[in-house]
Amino acid sequence: MNVLNRAEIIDQYLSKCRHNRSNHLARKGAHYELSTIDTNTARAIQSTARDIPLLDQCEIVILDKTADHGLPHTRPPNYICLPTSLCASSPNKDFITTLIHEAIHVHQRDYPDVWDTQLRRIGWSPVSTDIIPSEFTERVRINPDTCMNPFWAWEQYYVPLPIFRSDITPQLNDVHIKWFDTRHNTLSPKSPQTFLNRYGNMSYIEHPYEIYADLYSRRGLKTGEEIINQLNRE
Image (cartoon, rainbow, N blue to C red):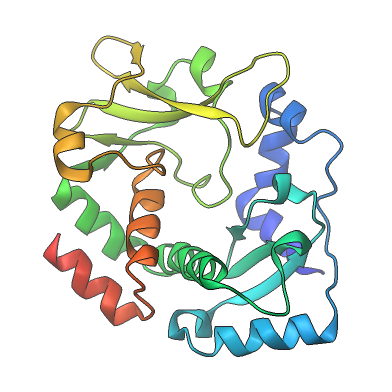
């Protein structure tokens, strides 16, 4: 059994995409399959990974350049999926940040209770998919990093949703965040003021896992201990 089949048994990511019209269309023509890179590039990535202790518990998997529109992501239990288009024989700073970002997602999978406890303390809480009307969930971009626990509310009521801008020709790299208010069943393009007070204007706000993977990777946190210590200080 190859790694992608093993991951699919756990998260059903590709199945979820196939059964959702918008996500199926957004991935049309893409080849979600394993690929290879040359030996020099592989050695360069391995050398870079050795300097990031978080990656000790991860396995890097190379995918076709069209897989998920070339976006890096993770799959369970511990796979970091990199499209060939991101791989280079001389990894730059952005690539290193990407590796850390994805390794943090693996950490979130490995320590769900820790993340759940800390996120609840900060002001986040998981929300059942049933709470959100299907007219909205059908337009939400499915994220392999978060698809097993996709929806969280900020301060109990405000759920960020990454919604495709186009219903006709949805693109994985073309979404906007709308905030679903669970009290009124409404969508708003404006982030709650309390969210802005805490996080400012960020790019990755669709899910608390993405928020903290972005924050901590840009700070260069490379170990599980550093992540836990920082979470405790939030």
